[in-house]
Amino acid sequence: MKRVMLSAAIIAVMVVIGCKNEAKTNNETVQTEEANEIAMANLSFGVRGNCGMCESTIEKAANGVEGVVSAEWGVDKKKIDVSFDDSKTNELAIHSAIAAPGYDTDKVMGDIEAYDTLPGCCQYDHEMAMNQSGEENHAGGVSLSNTIFQ
Image (cartoon, rainbow, N blue to C red):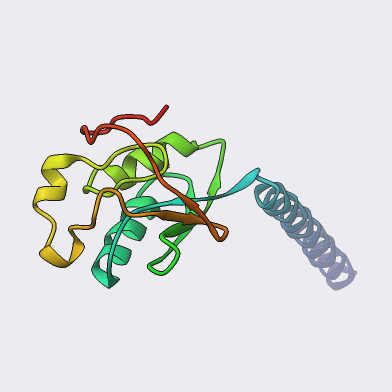
C-alpha cells in the first residue's frame, strides 16, 4: 500500500513539473514571435566613397548605430542599403553616423576634419555622383561639417 501511494505521489509530481515546463516553453515561443514582429525599416541612399577601405568604414559606421541590423554599401553605385529597427533609430541618425568619419551622404555632409585624415585612396571628389536605384543624385551645398542638405 505504501508503494502504491509513493508511486502515485511520484507520478503526480512528474505531471506537475511537466506541465510547468510546457507552459514555460509556450510563453517563450510567444515572446520570440513578438520579438520577430518588431517594425523593421529598409533604407537606401547615396554615400560618396572610392574603394574597399571606404566600404569597410561606411558599413562599420552604419552598423555601429543601435538598431541597425545590416548595412551594405556598393562602391559601383555609391549606394548603401540599410535594415534597421525604427523604434531604436532613424534615418538621420544613420546618415550622421556615416558622415562622422568623413563620408558625404544624400542628407549630411561628411565631417571635413575627418575627411582630411582619410587615406588618399578614400579622399573622394565632393561633387561625385551618388547613385540611387540607377538614378544619379548630385547633392548640392557648401561642404561644411555635418550640414544637412535642404
